[in-house]
Amino acid sequence: MPVAVVILAAGQGSRMKSNLPKVLHHVAHAPLLVHAMQSAQSIEAERIVVVTGHGGEAVGAAAQAYDPDAVIVTQSEQLGTAHAVQQAADALTDFDGDVVVLYGDTPFIQEDTLRRMLDARSNGSSVVVLGFEAAEPGRYGRLVTDADGGLDAIVEAKDATPEQLAITLCNSGVICADRAELFALIDAVGNDNASREYYLTDIVELARDKGDGCAAITCSEAETMGVNSRSDLAAADAAFQARVRAEVLENGVTMHAPGTVFFAYDTHVGRDAVIEANVVFGPAVTVESGALIRAFSHLEGCHVSQEAVVGPYARLRPGAEIGNGARVGNFVEIKSATIGEGAKVNHLSYVGDADVGDAANIGAGTITCNYDGVFKHKTVIGKRAFIGSNTALVAPVRVGDDAMTGSGSVITEDVPDEAMAISRAKQANKPGLALRLMNRLKAAKAAKNKDK
Ligand code: UD1
Ligand code: MG
Figure (cartoon, rainbow, N blue to C red):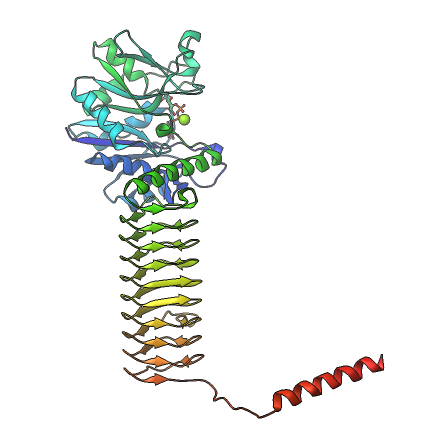
């Protein structure tokens, strides 16, 4: 059965105390909304409709930046969750299949959970709701079940009787129903309740009144975690990290201190890679099999090939492409640069906008001077080239294959293949001068002290 997903993201999120719409706050370097969209993609949703309201333009743009096919609809007044879903009706009139409703501020709903809901739908339940056992049921809607475990109604806390408030099985907000059925039920929802809102939750009772069966599927409370405040956001990040660390270990990656490694929503680490302590991944990083990322390294927008060694204390910025078996050592920054197979940049260097050939050796303190204040320029370093320590490569410049530069050189012109370039003042030794100079200084100091 084809599936469409409607993501509710019109709320303001005033408890975030932010100028940014709530769903655009990041967990693991992706907006909350993108996490919800990833849940939708995990069940191969044929259509994703995002309902926007507060900060609608920015929210719509973020959704389409992640998935250009996402359909954006506007809910100009927030009249309740049923009213929010209703805004997606037009975008789905031609869609035949099940519709799953997710919240943009609830980032961690798992594929397996959604599939269990869809299974319950194919087994004949008209409306399927995702519930969870709440440690503190508080203001969550309560799931009222019948003797056979079927779902009778969802009662909002504000409207509940004391007996209903004692129920601990709560509504996560995730609901699934057939498209035509869902919108027909929503049309019948009124706002005669404590909040004067159109509750999506009312569709359960409406379906039951027609004699249709409804069901609750459950998941852990952690999975349904929603974000309403900065402290929730921090807790969500921690929960994300805990889950992904476990997955990464499970996939055959070694981490000595997993609790100190921070992943992004899209980090890929191949099996038999080793990640030491205190490594931070920004977005868009792929680490291939067998690579070693040593302690205190920061990586974003980069690719580390097999058997490469990065760090300790390395910084790989967007566009860093580290070849097989290459080495990037301590206090080295690489940006928009390819480091060839087996090449070494071991100490204290900046390599930006550059191509470094296979097996080249970049000496300590080498700097590519890539920026003239307005434009960026490229440095090309040939295969097996040897760049002497503290060389400044003033781009655009090319150092040929098997070429060398002398330590401390400022290279402003291309160096031909196999040539040695030295560009620094010639050394002159003055015999005895050091001693004479020192004696003169000591005498001057003694004379000064005598005057006092
Ligand atoms: C809702 C459920 C409640 C459930 C709880 C789980 C209803 C009536 N209640 O309550 O049973 O336990 O979520 O967190 O559905 N939104 C819109 N437009 C609106 C209203 C809401 O887009 O007009 C969005 C919000 O931005 C949010 C989500 O829908 O992402 C839920 O809305 P919220 O106001 O948080 O609902 P709750 O009162 O928490
Ligand atoms: Mg809520």
